Amino acid sequence: MLTFEKVTPQNAHVIRRYYENCDYRLCEYAAGTKVMWRGYLNPAFAEAAGCLVVCNCIGGKVEFDLPVPGPEGDMDAALTAIEDYCTQKGLRPVISVVPAEQTALLCGRYARVTLTNERVWKDYLYRAADMASFAGRRYSGQRNHINKFRKGYPQARFVELTTADAPRLDAFWEAYGAEFQKGDDPRAVRELANAREMFTLLDTGWFRTGALEVDGKLIAVCLAEKCGSTLVIHVEKALYSYEGVYPALVQAFAVRFGGDCQWINREDDARDKGLRTSKMQYLPAELGSKVHFAIGCELDDWDAIPSLTTERLTLDALREADKTAYNALCLDDERNRWWGYDYRADLKGELTEEYFLDVARRDFDRHLAVNFAVRLEGCLIGEAVLYNFDWKGGAELGCRIAPAFAGHGYGTEAFAAAAEWALYRLGLGKVVAKCCKENAASFKMLSSCMRRSGEDETFYYFIKTV
Image 1 (cartoon, rainbow, N blue to C red):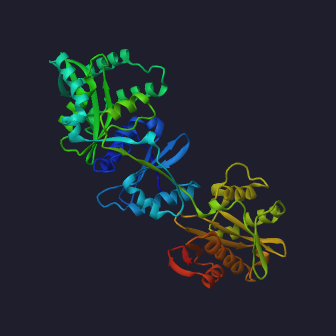
Image 2 (cartoon, rainbow, N blue to C red):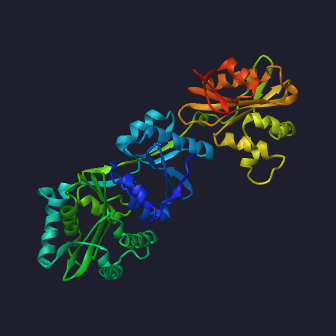
Image 3 (tube, one colour):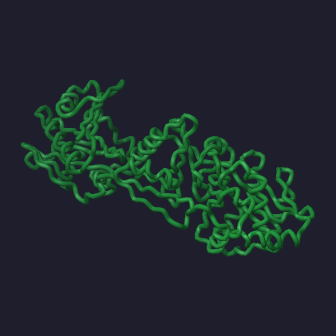
């Protein structure tokens, strides 16, 4: 299973290795974004199948970025690792910032998804050549502002910044704070603090940084990160009192650092009216979509466990009256050994009389599993559980029968009925199962209605398809 490590300035060099060649063009696929906004995104990363996998926790909700392949990365395997992680953690997979050009990949992979593509989070993408030249009639406004700036401050010049400029940067932030117009906006205050922190990381080599200076005083600063063919602008600040300074900074920065880039990403506007107005005035070539994929499963259409009948059995929902028999089944360590599950490993809270019933019901309510009670003449004798949905049209099926009723073929009968329902009523494309190699009874049961698909040191694996 994936093991995640929280992103910090000290370990962000790992994710930077992937982002430096990433051509998703969105600001989330940049080391600077993950570091600058780590207090909001709570990002953590893992490496799987030669890909970077980033998991964010925003407002308590877990969301994944689209995996970023390395030179020999396997996107399919990385997505499978995310799906397996979510299944084992009882989470719905959510892939939250998918570039528009990658949506077909995920739409083809998943049968059930809810897509969101909000305007407010779209990045502003400009052609780097346009920002460097501001050529043509449509950019006459920007050129006028720059000409006024140059006329008012002919001594202004663009300089690259290094760690040696720390004292001058401190003076700039003090001056900027004195002109700051959003002191009553907590998000803006936090963004300013984050921006200032980024300039303490110049020695990492991740960023391209520059400033406009007048008589040795910094009046505007910019910090960006090249990711593939895109220059992602993380910080762009200037003293408002210098008229025309912002377009002058935009152009000077593009001239100095945009020559090997096709695109400049000036990030989203986060619902800020002033930012949106400003970013639109620079005439973006595109608004970079960030498509949010909330992945569902076939259980989403079911609000009640159905009743299935076979020649001798009934399969339906667990009831309060089943509590004693169901607890005995769940606490049977010998049966659990063959089941391949120890409830102690996942026990949350106190083991009450209602615990196992509550877990089964909660899993169905969350559309994570179906626990069928297997009944003989109305009495609970076992259960068939459809679980471990793989989010691509498959799920795992298990069946266990109480010892007093073993050896009569009830397990085979119940298993076959549940598999039939899963494939032809629920709509799965496949049902998988496994049994311990020394469990001859389960091997016989599965072999009677499924096809062998493999084995390892512990299990035989089976599959049944439509």
